Length: 80
Figure (cartoon, helix red, strand yellow):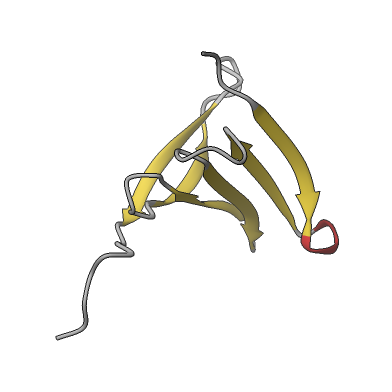
């Protein structure tokens, strides 16, 4: 079975939502939004974690983005 992908603007144009496999048991969302001069992304994973990334522009000749992982979070973590 193939995957589906929906990409759309949300939050009054302040964020981009990347929705993978909508309405399935493994639905995942990645939210992209600017933070000053940088672009941040939080991925809400079916594995119950939320890696946050800062996207970094690659050299102009490559024309791509790379992600620098910032800090992991976990929906299953409990406060101590």
